[in-house]
Each structure stands twice: as C-alpha cells, then as structure tokens.
Length: 131
Ligand SMILES: [Zn+2]
Image (cartoon, rainbow, N blue to C red; front, top):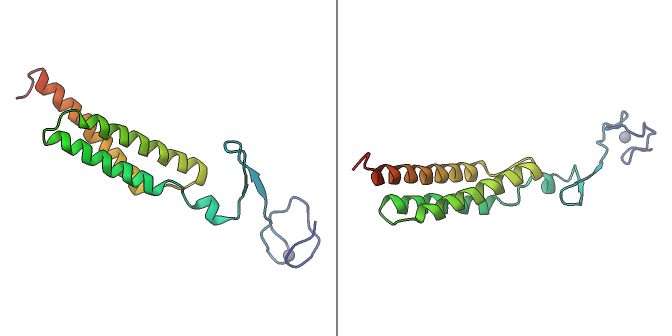
C-alpha cells in the first residue's frame, strides 16, 4: 500500500510510514457491540459514555445511605442499588473506552461501603451487641 500522506510505498502491515512517520489507521471490530471502531478516532474511543450517570448514581448512593444513618429505615438498600449500578457502568466504560469516571466510581464505592456499614450497625443494634 501507499502512504496517504506522502505517497511512498510501504509494507502492507506497517503501523507507521517509514518515510514521513504518518500513523496508519486501522479499523477494529468490536465484538461486543458489533461496530467498527476507528482506533484513531480519539473522541469515540477515549471519551467514556456514562460519566454523568456514574456521578449521579454515586451521589444518590451516598445520600440514600446517609438518610439511613439519620434514621430513615431501609433507604440504604436504595443507596446500595445505586452504588452497584454506578460501579457496573464504570466497569462498562472501562472496558469499552479504556477510560471511566474515577471520581464517579469512588463515590459509588463509598456509597456501597456506607450501605454495608449501615447493615452491620443495624444488625448489631438488632442483636443487642450495641445499644
Ligand atoms: Zn508517508
């Protein structure tokens, strides 16, 4: 094949043009979505899809778990659910885009932790270990 930039002849499976250094684009088939991904389309490949949703899930997770600490029963179940949804979305972004909202994931992990802690504290109260 010939280089698109400078026109010099090069090896068919070359990654770079030896004459001018131009990157050779290659299309990668994504087996999960069935779509062709252009690896050099930086935006499509590196910009995570669910960052905002992950952040919202993380915030909701923490809020609902804190509501349990101030005395509203069972809301930490909702908090844990939000946390799991957010963490799963972060993992999806990580696989698909090699990038994800780290702040969002941290919020979800904190939310899940607070939720589980609420369970433990609830259990200890219920069994009379603390009062
Ligand atoms: Zn070239």
